[in-house]
Length: 394
Image (cartoon, rainbow, N blue to C red):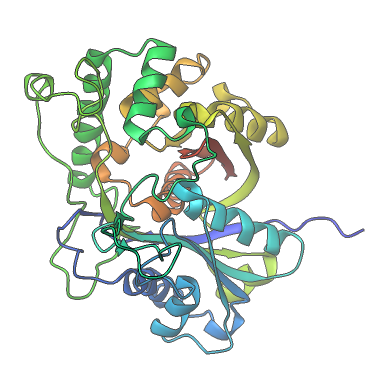
């Protein structure tokens, strides 16, 4: 049996992340996906686009303008040869990382030599949907659903405690792990401060690419705040709760993509890779505690790779909610907090659902390249109760 091939991240790019109804709201999701795909190729002129064996994109919605396999649409819109295929995957918030995992697996087993993996979401342009009636000529008013975020058209057989709103799930995680309001607000404030500092220092210059027709040079949701301002915000999901708009990730638009290659692909491009893909793991958890999903996923990924928390040089933990991120961190006492989201996280940068997994994977790869060596980890919680983690090496 042939051994698995090494899989390298040759490059990783993303768009600036737009706020809901903001600078990217008029850009279609398939155009966002095409933007990052085209950028990868423009940055690697030695690569013949016809050599790309497949393109994987994650997307959490699929009900709007991205409905006809957005990966394939991005291939065509980006001007790639029509012979290059594309496939779209959905693991909700983990979709972009799932695309990376599936693409890397194809390269590792020899089904591909050159692949693109990424993710895209336009929460601004997520459509309203109207289910078909159960019978002809209904007399009642129809029910319309927004597909922007969360549960809709829920199966009545699903237990109610599993279908709580995402924010209520964050409250439940906060209760379970003893995460108070003050700690959540402080964590959120630090995320914004780190993100603003990273942009000021030019740490995102190598990975963020412009979107044609959009006046947006950097992530749109980063803001200067204070502990006092955050403390004034009212809880959103419970009158006496701790989860607010200030310590939750916003609704966003954006795309990210990575170029993955084997040794032959490296030789064809003549470029030095950013990092190498290591072990991945996905796990399930009780849906209402979805925010703690990364805990077991990280443990399994690290065990597969023969690494441990203390040896990690950079960790990108997607910040869906401050409560959720802090709950995970409380279970990792051996992890140095200084290596976690050193350039800010989703609370500040934003969380365009299907793109976030690709964004944080690319962020780890760029930070490993800047460091010159080390081990990194990217991980996310996933709605309906899952966790996904991926180890990278350099």
